[in-house]
Image (cartoon, rainbow, N blue to C red; front, side, top):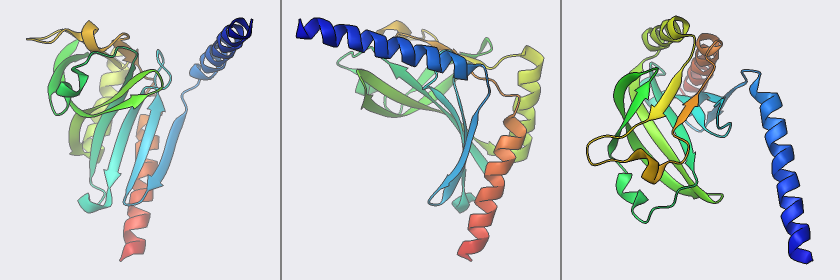
Length: 187
């Protein structure tokens, strides 16, 4: 009887959590903040809300570069998932094939959170390019795909996520402003 109560309570909690995320997913909410010597702008995914698209700006780079990363939560738990660390895995962004470098793999909830990098770029050129790219396709979707000696389904149960980027430019510029303010205070 106790197990049944726990089972029902857990399912009710998950149901309410999904409802709350769906209601929140309609809006494009950006988190803009600073942590030690870096600032960031982050937006949550449309498919898996906990997957974030991140734009990191470091004072060590004079606040002139942006590091574009994203996270993926996976329930899959293959014994060799850690072998992906520091590897480039195949992805598609709006159908365009590229790779993303796996930067970190950490246990999270009942699976793993995988942190992947899309690279670092000059801030203004990159965010305006990304905004045009987003406007052209009316979406920003990343799909983890199969590649040479890599089967995406082995490591990732949900392989596609998308993010709204309508507020990309003002959000990243605000994070850049935070970085510059912190950088000037250090001097």
